[in-house]
Length: 417
Image (cartoon, rainbow, N blue to C red; front, side, top):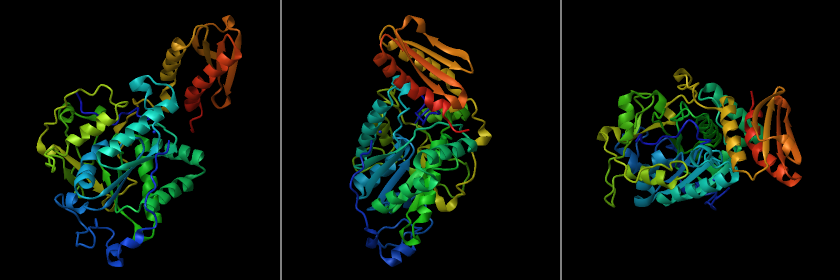
């Protein structure tokens, strides 16, 4: 099998925030703070420019924070967190900006968004526990726009609309940083987000803004996972290697790329890379077909997790648009997908439920006969001239079915241009 990556459709659970130490920035001395660009180990002389060999030791006894878009975005970096937080005295906290509520459609056939969010929150906590860490989920909307620079802009626009402006998004992460007071923050590379998922990139761009809002004395180091995980653009050789655990830096040949050696043997005798599989298994809703046995036997040089330091990259660089990922399913191309899901919902509904979806005066989906039902409930989506009509034997049944299906349709017809 191909070793899992974050899929194109990962629309990739409510708050599990722990009470974290706040106001403890005084624990760093002024001398250490002036060297904030280095990974601090107390007041030791950690070099500002790390080598690969420096990475594990430099995380000892540090406060490590991961910020991603979805509850499973941390799995690639799990070996880093396990070594640091299980064996080397560090503290780990994991944050997902969204509940990942749309992530159970494809994998479980689960259309109930709240149920999916609950599943994914529990899985996120289980994953965090692998590294003896805590987890919390914000409540930004789970989105999946075009896998391009334009999609990132639309993602940011939608979140800003829902959360009261981009300033509120940034302030939410500033508050998180002040509350947890991390030494090092991890995320996904904003230039591509590993899979080009726009939410991956949008979260990291907001995170960068939040870090830069902090006084220099309080700013953590920021390290991004920068592996190439766009399977549809991998060569057959890359796919074969990926199936055996290989990771590829993106962009290639970058002088600033750091590597964490996943082939390292940890104090319990396990290879660090094996904890990626543990994290995948924790997210069973996202990887339900994960085989019982997974071979991680790629070349040792490919079992290194690539990392990029924020200080070494231009976060505005655009690496996804050129890949022309227009074949990915996005909010613009998903009406047919929605229709299939509505058909599945209607088929599973009690007898006598009918669903009609009309766009521009033409019926684009029909399940059952409205004329044979005793009551019809309607919802108009004026923005795109869409009307949803649900029929049932009673008003209560029709309203309940309309409510469930409306949430699915509204996601697409209310998307920002």
